[in-house]
Length: 242
Length: 263
Image (cartoon, one colour):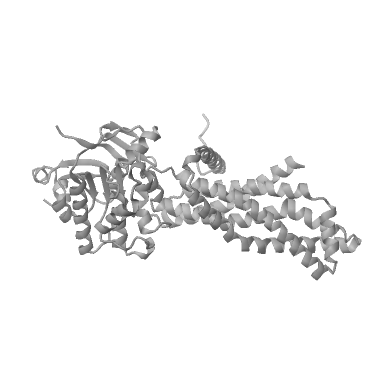
């Protein structure tokens, strides 16, 4: 039987009186790399924010790790969030902290992970090719380096669900390849469920197992690439370039 | 059947402004309650962040406060100088300057300077954190942004405005003394003796009580507008503007009520 890390069941979302997500049905199989593709403004970031429990569906349900999320129960919400890692589109690095402090931040919040934080931070920074930059200010790094710090921070606590919002945005092809390879390594090492929202179809096709196509606030397709090829919906073929 | 009121009519605009004002006050009250609730959960208190805020808010504001206070004291002496000279009641100069500085002008002007420097900076800082998703990042990491970011700022602003006002009072009186001698030609000893004889302890304490409430009001107002930011850099600018204006209104309102209750 399939195990799901996350399920969005018939969820709709209204923001500022407009319906931005419409009866979404999305299931994320555990231990797989999922791609979220669609035009800009189709609702990919909103779906990621909903999966990160930052947005509550106006209608419908969100299930994470086999539990329905109750947004009023702050204690259990905090517990669920400790199993989620997010790399935001604009990175959301704490500019008042150093590179090392940013990466170590999730570890400090979890009492079970506070042992040997400096070693864990060093290992995480080594894995993203930023060894020796622990004491640097965030502003002293290039865009690509900052993106790698954000990825290291999202993954350092080995969360069950890892969400990446446009991990290669504005980066050169070499750095982009490196970042996608990094995501693959993280997933293989920790067997976590990964979701990537991106427009970089070529690289997504090489990396991801399952594809979800989002259009005008609806998930219009979920499946493998070979299933996408058989789809009768032209939009799916256009977005996945099959 | 009566026609519905048009939304862009004078009445419609007035009503909308009224509702927005009430919504803002309501949101600030809720923020205040959440701050108090976080304060009670003392185990979540972030001491490092509190020390950082105390330094940033207090120590760095000292030069501005000293400069403002010294000129406020000088101004009070100059303003009462004509009356004193005309009547020959030179012994009253200390009383006049001391009363004004301690109870009204000192705390208000230092509070306004504080709101312009610290409150505006706080709104911009929090607003930038909102638009760059740093607040969301904290929430995903299971951290309550109120306990982690707002409570240390709230405490630091109250504590530091209290001490800054006390220090400011001292420099205001000193500024007044120098002006008394330099501009009015009245002996400084007469000025200081006038202050001591006037028994201004009650005014001094009232000024410090006002500073505590001003600090709390500036903290809540600036944090509220910072957390409400939407729409990028332009939104941050708008929030800073709203923060400074609302803080000034809050300072004058709080000042009025404390003065009425105290006297």
